[in-house]
Amino acid sequence: MMRYFTILILTFSFASIIAQNGSKMKLDSLAFEAQILRYQESVEKNLEEARLIADSLMLNAIKQKEIYFEAKAYQLLGHYFYLKSDFQNSIDNCKKALNLLEQLKIQGPMPNTLNQLGISQRYLSQYDEALKSHQKSAELNERINGDPIDLARSYLNMGNLMFDVKNLKASNKYYQQSEEICIKYGLNDFIPKCWGNLAANYRYEGQYEKALEYHLKSIALFEKNPSIALTREYNNIGAVYDDLEDFNVAKSYYSKALRHSEKYGEPQLIGLIYRNLGEIAMVEKDYGPAEEYIQKSMNIANNTQNIERLIRGYGKMAEIKAATNNFKSAYEYRTKYNHLYDSLKGIEVTERINNLEIKYQTEKKEAEIALQEEEIKTLSQEVEISNLKKGLYAGGMASAVAVSGLLFFGFRQRIKKNRIAREKQEAIYQQEIEHKQKELTSQTLHLVQKNTFIQELMENLENIKNSPEKFKMEFRRIVMLLKKENASDKDWEVFKSYFAEVHNDFDQKLKTIYPDISEKEIRLAAFLRMNLTTKEIAATLNVLPDSILKSKYRLKKKLGLDKETDLNQFLNTL
Image (cartoon, rainbow, N blue to C red):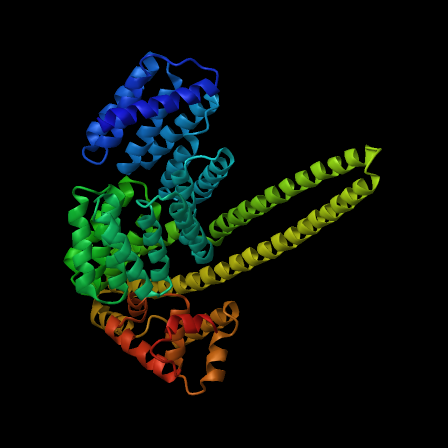
């Protein structure tokens, strides 16, 4: 009974929309709305059944020339293809839906469709387009006073994009805005998604207790009504324990996520879980399963055109091949990694995204100022009309004009203050961009060191190939090369000079404050300052993660830091 009541409400809502646009309501609109409701009910239970419903809706809409429902069918197909991780098809269908809605001049469903479009664009690494889609969704929603859930999604998705370029300040701001909207409108089912994303940021910043707190809160709510969101949270909390080197707990959550994904999952998420399981196997030096997991992850990334995931897969396969003495394959994978990384993660990409963020915030400020100027204009007109009125109450009229003049002056002052605030905000965002450029420069230098190391290995292998009689000598040289640090002292000095340049003489500050600090400790501090994980530092220095943990403990002790002080956060302040 409740289901038919919902259909009836939807029908009346649709009738209202059509009436506003000067169209006529057809008798079979109820059947179209029923199909949309059936899709929504089926999509969590049987994805292929949901696809058949969307296709049926499309055929009926085209046959009866119901353009609105044709647009809705494209929207549903965009959602279906997203769940199948077929992101290009999702984008194409969302764009078709938007074009039809624009023809009809019906704006209500647009924010939801724009959000779906932006999510699929992000998975294809089309970051600029994705940010524009979500910004347009938020702007339109606020202008038409649309569905609050769509506005909450817009802010959440913008937060995800800011996280991708490690602009955590902007990312946290958007997640918190999304949470505030959920609280204001009672969107309790959506709040856990905000918590899960905030937890991911806390994890990246090394605030693991906070990350676990938010993930556990999120999981507690999602378990009451299981969905794909719960699968994501199992995987995300596993990543926190992974960072904490508690690999058994991490594996248990990853395995739980993989089992849960059999019912609630999508290819790109399953690929992420495989990758995480593979990386733990790498740390445990169990290279057979590690290669199997990473390869599965890469296959999914390739099929779904997820370049971000493919890049990381190439990097991990290079490490696996090097660890199993297959240096030729290691070199090939590393070459592919470098090529894709440079094309996707260059400084210019981050600049574009952050500049879009600045433009978005600036335009919002300008809109506020334009509104204030309109208020001033209206007030000025009222003052002029008042001045034209003659007659009785002249004394009272003079007072009114004086008050209006003061209000006018007050508005002018507000404009000036807002302009100054906007300029300050732009300066802050510009500083953030410059900071991110420095971080990317550091990462690039790190990759250069890795490449030099692998190229030297390849040269030795070529010597063996060309002169078999030199096998023993060259083989011993390769073993020695693998055992020593990746970068020679000379390489380290060059790297250190560049690092000091982009990080404001970081090593000199350390030496000044702590004169007895060693070069190895400075090197470790530099890697931590670059936000490399324990596993990444261990791989770079060719040592076990346990060794890095012990070195971090000794460094923290030498720096005189108490238990409550986070080492990474302390180094980031230097």
